[in-house]
Image (tube, rainbow, N blue to C red; front, side, top):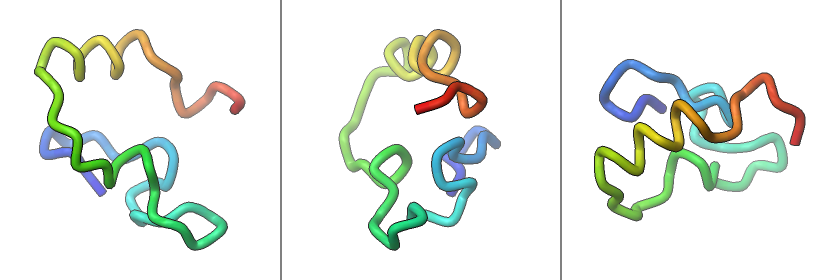
Length: 52
């Protein structure tokens, strides 16, 4: 799934589901956050290349 800006979810790669078949909690959350918070998470948060 994309978040509207062209980024593909780094956790599920746009499928909307994780390997276990559950909804991806990274991109399917319905929480509304500010643009500032979103930008901080995207640029300073955990990257898809980081190990969990």
